[in-house]
Length: 211
Image (tube, rainbow, N blue to C red; front, side):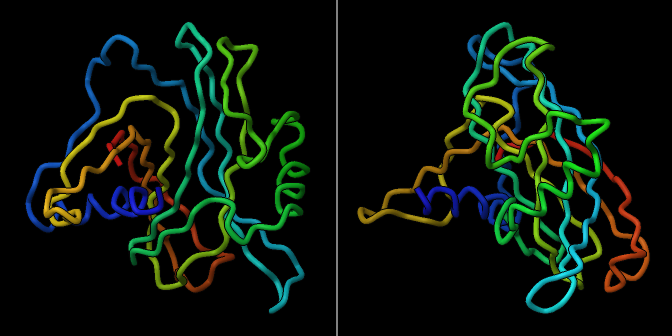
């Protein structure tokens, strides 16, 4: 499973380097395929005044998911932040529970039922009344980065299986990589990236990709 996730993460860069076209999500989904509606707030910072090495910085965004597919669906999310220096941070890694509590207090009036990504169940019930507000949190990233992309997987059951352009199995056959329809939101950091407190997070673009 870890090998598959590694190949899935690296495939886009490998395909680009070899000038091989990567698959794209379907314009019209096939019968049985679904994608839930997602709305999100752009990434914000939160600094805890304590930590092993002093104040500790985190980044987070809030997702609102609404299942309008006409049926309950399985939900297995994965959220990663990738900087333009190619650092990849999975959501929740090295994030203490108190960070979510601080975020929940900050947004209590707008999101009274906010949940942490790690605590969300694996099923999204249909209908507006069952919409979920979810906090996705990352530890601070490379201070040399001038931009980043957030990848949110699990919003759709659309998948694709492609042959890895380089990797081979024990028999010398191409390794198949399984990709999932993923939302990619791209941002730039305006100002001095090293001065985190004053940097402006500027939204660039959103796209659906297979990753």
